Length: 74
Image (cartoon, rainbow, N blue to C red; front, side, top):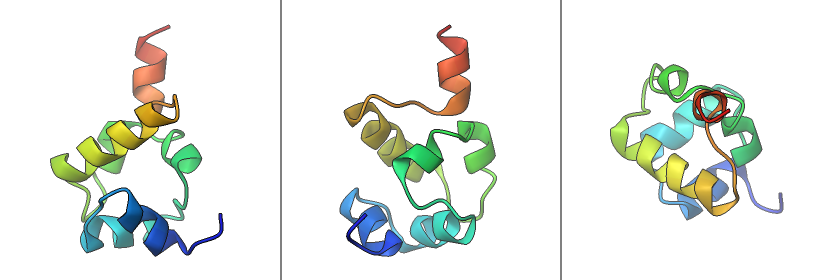
C-alpha cells in the first residue's frame, strides 16, 4: 500500500472514528477486514452501520466478503 492506512480508509469513504477504530485494531487493508466477522467489527468503538456499509461495498468491489458472510455462502 502506497498510502497511509488513514488515507486509504478515507479514500473509501470512512469517517474519522471508523478509521481510528480500524487502525487501532491493526486493520490496515480490505484483506484484513475480510478476516473479521461483521458482527465483531461492529463491536469496535467507531464502527457503525454506515461504516459497515462502506466496508461491505469496498469488499464487494474487490470480490471479498466479511468472514461470516463467506461462511454463510458455502
